[in-house]
Length: 436
Image (cartoon, rainbow, N blue to C red; front, side):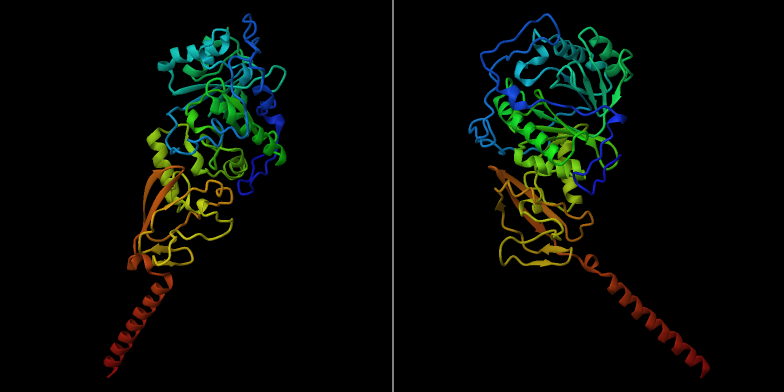
């Protein structure tokens, strides 16, 4: 049963119709293993259960690698996702045993062979394909060897290292089905959080906290079976940790994969409510999406902000930085300093003088924001960004509306009435002259 996107966080579940979303164990348990542990036997595909390397402490207030690290939210996010068209997730063990380069690890045959096969057949594939490892546990809904494919929204069960070449040939090269397995349809939204601590300490500190918060919010809002979350391996852009990818359908039913960066636990409810619940992109955390090049991602965001009547502030909208509440009508352009001469109407605003650039540093005021109406009217806005520090400088200039843009429907009716009256007088006078 499809959810109503106008009602955030209200989803129904129909587990019998499709494969259930990912079920994960408590991430903090798996990330805080004894660093003295070492990798286990290499005799099988799934027998390595020790810890390889120090993935870092998941301290909530880690000043060096956590959400308060010096470089946090210092870089622009939009356009930081490399172009690709298909995303494979191989379910394999948990982050505590993932080596830094799990796709090349000697003792992990399945990810190593699958990665090698994907790379070898890359030129034969019609779609640019990315491979990532996500958590898997035998005896659960998501077992070791399961493969999730997006945007196809299908799952193949229990891939082994013996099947890798056939799987890549049939599914990824020929875009067909892997006959030994049956593709299971996936429903709902899938959230993946980069938690590859042995690859980068920032992801090892931030990732587990985000997974834990997602699980808490999913349970609080009753979204089990509709929204799933799993830690995943390196996806690129460790400096943007916490990194989150959300796969799901948009308002048109198309499957998209949206990437978010600099996500904190406090941002999780916002992503659930706005992105998953309402289908809205949270622009100030948005890195890009599957299927678009880096340049297309930037242009797509600019166009989206223009359509929504928003001004880009390092990826954030004006009304978000101003902490507007739901239901308020927000002018298209408002003056933030006295004496700048802003004329504002019900839904039309034009600042005739440029607004003095103002630095925006409040990143926590985002959660109470709402989107502007799509039918935004008014003067044209000229926007320039100057990235500096955690905030950004924004210069907004609204052109004075022309007489045509200011022309109202009532004015049209009045003018038409005057013309008709004049014509009536002319016709009456003509008849009078003929009679006389």
